[in-house]
Structures are given as C-alpha cells and as structure tokens.
Image (tube, rainbow, N blue to C red):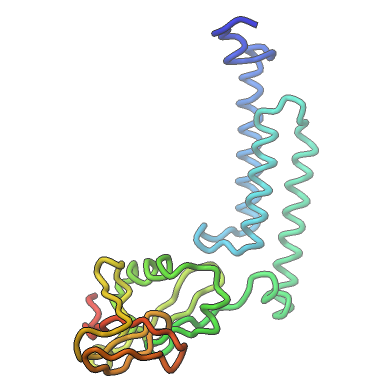
Amino acid sequence: MSAFDWQRMLLGDVPVLFLGEVAFRALFAFVVVFVFLKVSGRRGIRQLSLFELVVILTLGSAAGDVSFYDDVPLLPVAMVFVTLLVLYRATVMTMRNSERFSDWMEGKPVTIIKDGLYELNSLDHLNISSDEFFMELRQQGVEHLGQVRLGILETDGDMSLYFFAAPNVKPGLSVLPGEHRSEYQQVPEAGIYACVRCGHTQPMSSGQQASCPRCKQRTWSPALSHERLR
C-alpha cells in the first residue's frame, strides 16, 4: 500500500460509477423518509415525543445505511420504513383510545412552579440541572420565581408559563446566572431572602442563619421583586 493513493483515499475498491448509485440511493432514502413524515402527519421537531424520536432515529439509521453501503439492497430497507409506519400508526391509534397507554408512552405534563415556588416532588424526579432550568426560564423573560403563577413542563420538553399580573408579583428567587446572584448561609443585612433550592421567601435580620421550613436548605439569596418586562 502506497501513501497518498488517491484511488484508495477517495473511492476505495469501488468504481467511479458507484458515485451515481450513491446519489440514487440517497434520493431513494430521502423520498421514503419524506413520504413517511407526510403520511404520519409529523409535527414540529420541538414537539417530538420520546416514542417519535426513536422512530425518527431508526429512520435515519436505515436511510444512512442504504445511501452508501453497496451491499444493502433497497427493498428490505423499504420494508423497514413500511414496518415503522404501520407501528407508528398502530401506536398512535392505541394512544388515542387508551389514556393510560398514552401516559406510559409519552408521559404527563409536570407542574414545576406553583405560586412562585418550586414543586419539590416534581423537580426531584426530573433529569435537569438547575442551570439548564434557569436558562429555560430566562429565555421566556423570567427574572425571578415571584413573577410566575404556574409553570408546567410539557411532554415534548417545552415549558408553559403563566404569570402573575403586575400588581400581584411577589418577592422570589432570582434565576439569573451565578455572577448576578449572591448566595449566603449567614445573610449580611436585613431583608427578604429566597431559599436557593425551593424558592421559599422570608424576612431575615442581619447576620441571621436559618434552615428553610420547606426543604431544610440553609443557603439563601436576596429575593427580587421586579415586575416582568414584556
């Protein structure tokens, strides 16, 4: 084997004409995937459920194999797509007729914020870091939890937020990044502070140390009370 063998580097053992076959295979995979998505009534990518994501990944794997592997025939791959389409349709129909099966497949919406406080039981079961959670809130214009009347994590991963009217905004835990939010175990001055774990707020005096009555956490951050900017 010689170095910089362009035939080996670019084509390997296949002839140049195989590039035309690759183009045809890629077109075949594109058409089949496109037809699948049209027939299945695919929603936006942000709305993919776990089950639908598995179907899409399986489609992508089959499409990639048939596109450039010369030993993968077309008809068996076409059968993969047909099987997936039948499975998808049957699953969707079953989910429409069985709420229990639908909840098992796609999950339920989860309440994560209520009256400006984290729902601890919900957060403890979610695989999401606080930084990621805060980012989601900031991207929807939230500065602190006291602005949020109700927050629901939807089954597709989106977050639905319902806000207090301006006069009803209460002091709440800041969701700003660490460099914009101070945290203390012994508060430096009197004021209203928020528990950094659950969002509970309470007045504290200068130099006070306390455990949160909701979650027993001992770290506090100055509560914010600004109205939400729209």
